[in-house]
Length: 231
Image 1 (cartoon, helix red, strand yellow):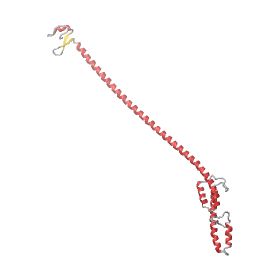
Image 2 (cartoon, rainbow, N blue to C red):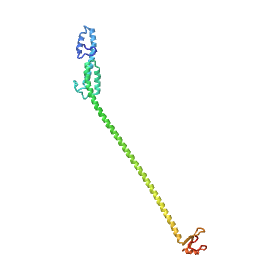
Image 3 (cartoon, rainbow, N blue to C red):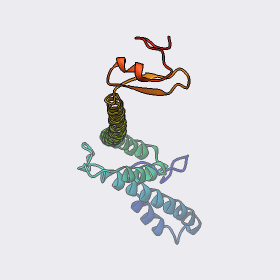
Image 4 (cartoon, rainbow, N blue to C red):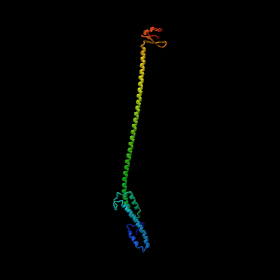
């Protein structure tokens, strides 16, 4: 028989021999041969699936014995081989190929883990570098702002010094002007005193020039004679 009760290809069956026998019986038992041909075609199709799956799994290993996973094995190739294997009806063939695929899956998972770790480290380093550049940029910006603020304060202090200098200069000018004016008045008083001895008239508050000395008061009509007149 080519197929078991579940309709799966019998393990290690010789399909070619069965097909030859059916051809020999075709004239004697045409109805029987017609039924056998249906089974033969089904068996051939299942054998093809097994062969394709086996070849796909073998490409994932360095040898047909499947003892070492090939470095060229990829996740896509594994997925394709697994799809073919899952479609196999024969339990024995499916189990053997599935075991081999499990070995490939473990190997690929380990490689993927290594790649994931390396990628994570690369991303972490990139983020750290980016953060460092940002912090450096912020520090430069802060330093520039502080420098500008310092120049502004310096300019302000310079302006204040200029105003203070101007104010001092103005005050100095005013003081010099006051000194000059005072000197002028002093000179006028001194000139007046050179005219002789003077006193104040109590009648009108005017200044009276008596003469060279106080004794000359006797010569002024209407004034009392004495050392301290009009007291």
